[in-house]
Amino acid sequence: MLERVPEARLEALAEAAEAYVDDTFGERLGLVPVAPTNLPHFIIDRYAIWQGSLNGRTLLLMAIKEILPPGSGATAQYLKHRDLVQRELGADLVLLLLDRAPNAIRRQMVDRKIGFIASGAQLYVPEAFLDLRERAPAFAIASAASISPTTQFLLLAIMQGRGLGDLNLTELADDLGVSIMSISRTLDELEALQLAKAHHVGRQRRLHMLLRGQKLWEAVQAQLQSPVRKVRVVYAQDGEKIGPLAGTSALARYTMLAPPRTETRAILAASWKSLAVADTLRPATAFDDERIEVQTWTYDPRILARNGVIDPLSLYLSVRGSPDERVAQAAEELLEPFEW
Image 1 (cartoon, rainbow, N blue to C red):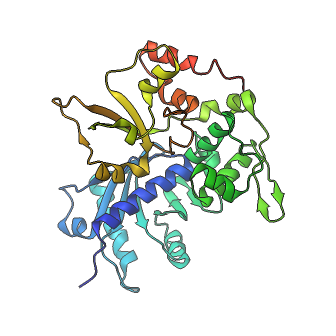
Image 2 (tube, rainbow, N blue to C red):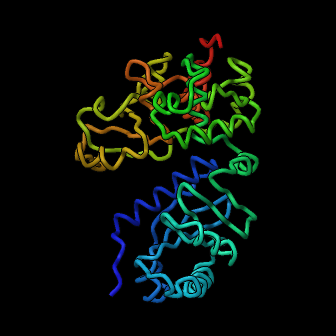
Image 3 (spheres, rainbow, N blue to C red):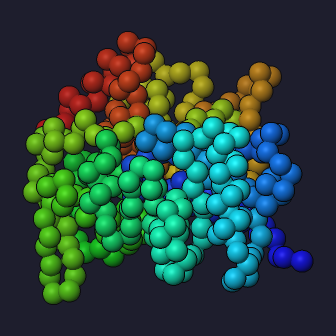
C-alpha cells in the first residue's frame, strides 16, 4: 500500500506555492480547497485540489496525495486525470503542485508541457507562455502589474527613513525579517525597474538605490498594493497581543478621524494560524462585545510600526481606495507631513 502524504503537509505545500507566486510574481492566487461532487471518486481519493485564479484566468492546482515510486507511470496517468478534471470543472489552467522536485522531474514536466508549480524553484504555465524560474526574475517583473510584496516592503522602509543603503543581502534580510532568497529577488526586481543598480563590495552584493524620497514615491506608487490579504473579526480581549493598530483604528491615531467601535489589528499572514491557536482566537458572534478585526498582511506590519501603530505609507495603501469619503480624505492627510 502506498504511503499517504499528510493533509497538513498538503495544506502547507499549497500555502507555500501561494506565497511563492505572490512574492516572486506579484500575483495572488486566492487558493481555496475544493472537492467537486461531479468528479470520479478515484480522482478525489488521489488528488488534493485547490481553485483560484492566475492573471485573470481560472486556475486549479492538483497535488498527488500518495508518495509514488519512480517508474510508476504517474506522469502519463496525471495527464489523463488532468484532462478529465479540466473538462469537468471548466478551468482555464490546471497545474500540478510539486514539492522539492529534482531538476530531472521538472525538465520532464517542461518537455511534456505539463504546467506545474515547484515552490521556490519554478512556475511553468505553457498555456500562458510563462516559465518563471528562481534565477530568471526579469520575466516576472515585465509581466506583473504590481511590485512584489517584499520589494514594496523594502521601498516603504527606505521612503520612511530606514537606513538600508549599502547593506548586503544578509543584513537586509535580517533587518526586514525575510529570507535572503526573497531579498535577492527584490534586488533583481529593483534593477529591472531601474530603481537600483548592481553594487558589489568584494563578493558581497549590496543595495544601492538610484531614486529616493519623493521621486521614488512618484515612480512606484501606481504599482504599490494594499498589504492586506484577508480580514477576520474575532473574539479577543487583548488586541495589543495580536499586533499593531491598523485600518481606521490606525488612521484615527494619525488624523482627526474618529476611532471605530471595533478595533483593527494587523499581523503577518504566515503567523495567523499559530496566533489563532496560541491565543485561542475564534470568529466573533453577534453576542460578543470584545471583538477585534484582524488584517493578515503580505509582509510583517510590526517591522515598520511606530508606537504600536502601523506605518503611515502602508496604512495609506490599505485605505486609499475606501468608498467612505471621510476615510479617503483622511488617507490623503497621511502624505502631508512627509518631507521626503
